[in-house]
Amino acid sequence: MAGQLRIYTIPTCSDCTYAKRYFNENQIPFTEYNCEDDEAYPREVWELTGKQIVPTIVINDKVFVGFTENLKEISELLV
Image (cartoon, rainbow, N blue to C red; front, side, top):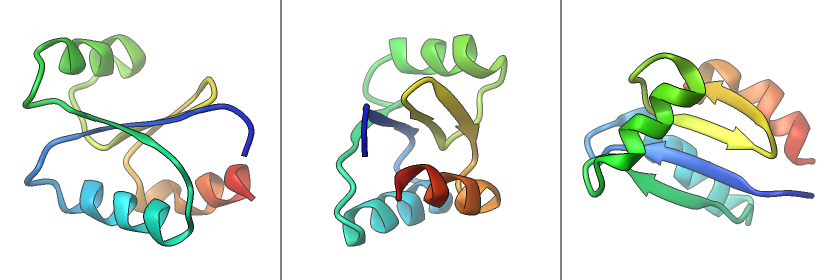
């Protein structure tokens, strides 16, 4: 995969957990930003999406809000 994968999460988000498990199982490197650890991360999510929703996943410059509903497109980008 070219580029960088970032995922904005919170610990209680099941879709976040599923996304991280998917990336780990498929050996896809990612950087996690826990929105509860730093108040800058929710602001970044807002700037990227205009919403406060996790997971927010950024692959290169493409932004996805949610994982499960975007799994097909995300998988295609990561092949």
